[in-house]
Image 1 (cartoon, helix red, strand yellow):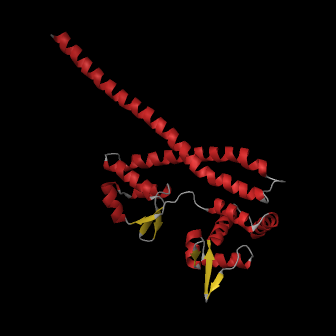
Image 2: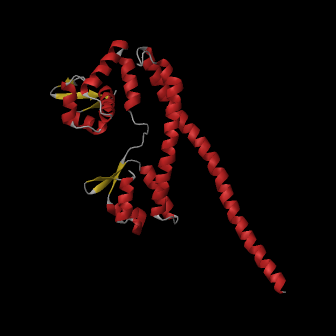
Image 3: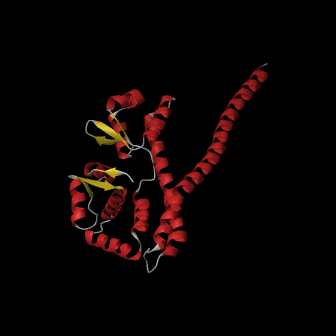
Length: 255
């Protein structure tokens, strides 16, 4: 199990050191193991912090969260609770965020790096201002955009495409999650709560959902892209042939 000092834990959990200490004082987070004068935290602390952060963003109070955690602890062992907290709190992507300066963006996108396009990229979450540079949540997404611009697509059109894709993919994710929740999670609730071995079962189902979702979307996207690329090229070639035929007809008629 990984080990973290408090500043690293705060960075990974998107929390402040002060808040971590507040959560400990409120009994929401277990104290660290001491190694000399240094507190050592683990993945269990990180999972709990991410769960606390999600619940706080939904406007639940410390008392609400403490009650939920106490109910879980009465109905299941700590291994099952940690497993579910990890699934809930862990990011689904293993992509490591990066950082980029305005100069580096200019190297990638050239004159397309305008204030309007930068503001749009920030609004879409493609870039996040961080002092005199930008944090890049998904370097793969930024690289894909740079490749599209390199082959001639305007950056504005790339950002339009990114916005539409995000909307469509988010709808797919919501539909998939809702369907699994209705059919796999709700049936395991007891009096509206997940307790005991159900915690572990739900964690296992949720963990399996990630590769299944990616496999399904990749397969359907490949089928759709194959069909639509063929149609687009077919339309293009048809237009060319019509022009050639029309030209031949004109020449023949003139003769």
